Length: 31
Image (cartoon, rainbow, N blue to C red; front, side, top):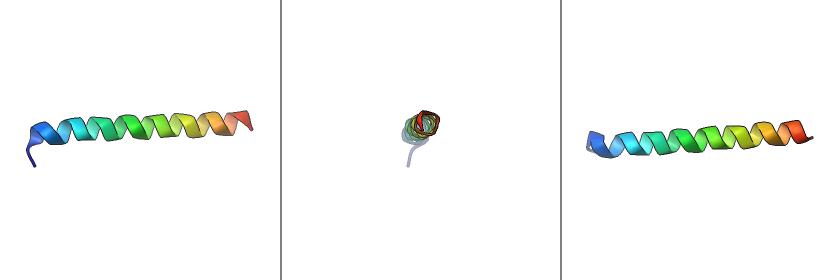
């Protein structure tokens, strides 16, 4: 796989991970 394609995929995966962590933290704070 070319590096040009791998970098955006890594960034997108990182953004999804951060978003899911924030949602998880928000859910725990609500309870």
